Image (cartoon, rainbow, N blue to C red; front, side):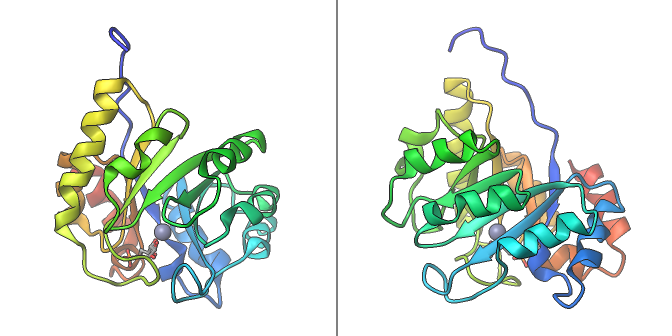
Length: 226
Ligand code: DX5
Ligand code: ZN
């Protein structure tokens, strides 16, 4: 990959809809959209891979019907994500991320996501080493390092994940990959700066964003940090 110019990705704040008001999801989506934040992170849980349930493809489709036009970053926390790719692509996902931990054909599923016109991402739980996704890093648009055990919002950031972020960023640079490096779980402005220094460029922020006294100010402070 000698000589390839590695693009520096603009940092992205992706509000996590999970922390919004579930009785008014379109309004929650509009909080970020109204601040010109280009991404929205949508967590899909199956009660098996993680001990919680959230949204389905119909939620995603309904947000599109409600006029939400931002980039939908759909994070599938499912034991069998390959069964739901078509449904989420059709519903309006722009990027679909799948976990490495469950057993299914990861490479075929990533390829299928792209065939359906979406970007694809691969996700690592805190206990999973970076090496587990290495063989797939030549065919993704995003790598996501979980900085909490997935399943619930509002958990404490796990600082011990920073070396994994650094490791993936180093690999990305060494091999000239241009995927985004995302962090998700317990992110606030202070630890976002640490993640940024470690190489992350995409920041899923649920509780800190939605529960901020002033989300506009939060977004402005984020853009100064970045
Ligand atoms: C956790 C989800 C996260 C969650 C982050 O399983 O993947 O996206 O919404 O929320 P906070 O920022 O509250 O940790
Ligand atoms: Zn998530």
